[in-house]
Length: 534
Image (cartoon, rainbow, N blue to C red; front, side):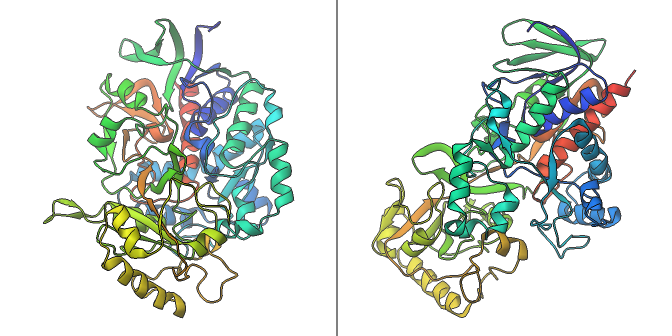
């Protein structure tokens, strides 16, 4: 690095890190972003890329007035008593202020009116998308080849989440405008999380942020108990006059940390492979406190993408809720409402005390050939031949034998499900009751329940299900993003945001756009605090 001293150092280049960098420049600080991977974006790049921002000015300009107290009531409902109320309040009450700062800096954002709050009509919930914001689409060429953004497997190139819903949702992929998709792929348009990273990166570079890739951080430097910089893995040092913010993700890619803090036998890293717990290690070496959300509903249910065994594909919105698919356990029984991925992940964490095992693990997504023909399966478009890696059989009994589950119960389970599907209701779990899930993952061309169809057409297929997502444990931070010491006081000069910080702003729940949104809001608050610090 040419410069060896900045006001503000940001470790990590996901949405939270780049937001902190942009905010730091807006507050007049000199800023550098250090990313250990060879590309930028972290987990944000492979996400749907939305920001949950109550009371924002974009909605107000569209004539949609929000109620901040209602938004706070909804956020507390989502947190379910497992969050830090000071951090929940800091997020909700500062979201509009932070969003305005990013808009003023030049980040191109827009409303995503097709996306209501997940749990509407929960207390304080919004039935429209006035609280959901996403990045404008962006040509990759605008980055001028300077930096590479991590390419994920979740989303088709060049499409925004709101567009997917307006075109009929994930299940209606067959009806999306093929010409538009082909043109955007050809022109290398960035959408979803890639677009958000691109917009933040362009703004950061325009404002003069130094962005460095393939630069690992080995140690935090202190003087008089204050963090004053970092030592890099190459042995050199970079100083920070106002502070260091750890925004380098969680420990999703570190098997030992996952075993220690999550304890789930079916874990798979859904984020960047570089997310190996660096932030926790750096912080705890200085006595930083950790916080754990005891009931973690902020996980994703997915599978290894066929043909890409190290790539996590989320089927919580793009698979399990589709008509003609169900989730079953080793006993060959359904165990949840597959149309609500939070129900799925909570059921997969259920522990059988007498059996000394997780009651619903291992678990599988079972679907028939009609579902394969009508709906996208992982990365494959509708109607594509099933990938050779996907287990299949001509009968449910044979399929059960191949994957090692109860071959007598699975056919009975499917028969009962099919009878309900024919009547358009799910008497066991009430599948298809949430408007959010129906709009995203239902097939409205079906008569009756848009998330129910029988599994009747052989061959039948099975995908082993995995869990991964926002980790339950992170560095304990306060309402300004300051990292707290195990003795309770803030560690001077040390901040954390994004998935490096404990999800105290979410608690038990999950709201689309809240993880990225909180990362950006607390990124803004860390920069504000650093700029105002003596």
